[in-house]
Length: 251
Image: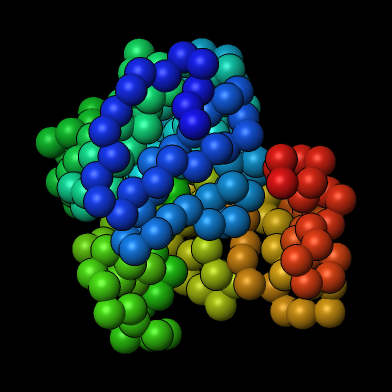
């Protein structure tokens, strides 16, 4: 299975090709290492990317967010940075398979050395689905790729926000998905780096459960005014998505 514009590529042991059901695009993933989840899909739907804008995805993993944003928006160019070589390699091969090498760049690098990679004020939009867990908080996986993706092993929340603010143009937008239990810390860190929270949407797995994700938009150099959008509920019943998820996010 591949997109109409794709080039052929060889899969490595454990890898598979998944249909993204957007523009005929596909993505290479390795279930034994890490696969994208609902949080990345919801974040790509929450983002606004205008015609001609340049976008940076911090911690792009296998490249799901740049690929979805290219499919859904009229942004001019998308860049994903990923510290794990295996994930960055899968992302780059997925970009090539979809014929998107002129629209999407994948960089294997450390965002903490962002000053060596990206100029200040060089992006209109920054997106990130960063590690959620601090240190030993939560259950750690035995496999290193999943641990790095889910825990602040290679970068912290402050690393992501500080570098995101540095590369954003004035009035540029920062989008992030995270866990609600860290909201106070997130808002404090946003403001420390001149990012004003502007939109927030809580995501609930079911209507009668607590929210397990939060979608956020912050504006560099913006004035203080936060809009809290209506709750987003993912499932109607077990295994059955709500109609909004089916209509807006393609599930």
